[in-house]
Length: 158
Ligand code: MN
Image 1 (tube, rainbow, N blue to C red):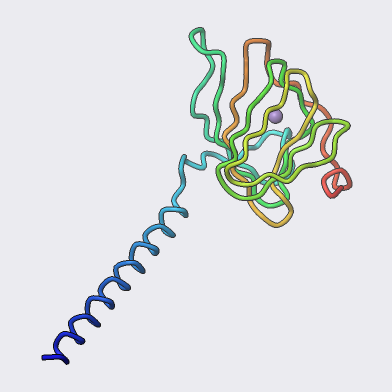
Image 2 (image 1 turned 180 degrees about the horizontal axis):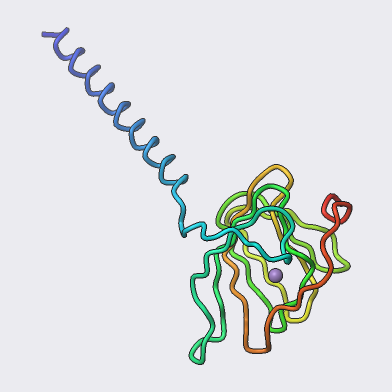
């Protein structure tokens, strides 16, 4: 009788343990699932390295903001550039770098929010060792992005 109780208790513990492990495994898999599609490889010269864009919302007469999901492979980054109406980045995965002209480069990670004011020159991209995924919300009411010089390897490493 005593042995039976102990065995059933042991079985219950094993069942709970197995179930917890299964749930943890499911969570791990969920984290690896893309939130939004990766989109198409960016082929223009406004980016250094390999990056992908999936447009999510285009600006139109009803809405001033465009929203795009951008995935940067390690080392990939934008040119220096200006958004006449500013930009907000929501970091959804990985580790990236952001920098405004005249300020130090900052490291940003999944869950960080970055606000670039209107007409402030800046760049953003992946860190050297990790990919970086951002949702970029860009005001379009004052014109398109103004692309500037490339971010040199020296600037990137600083
Ligand atoms: Mn930008």
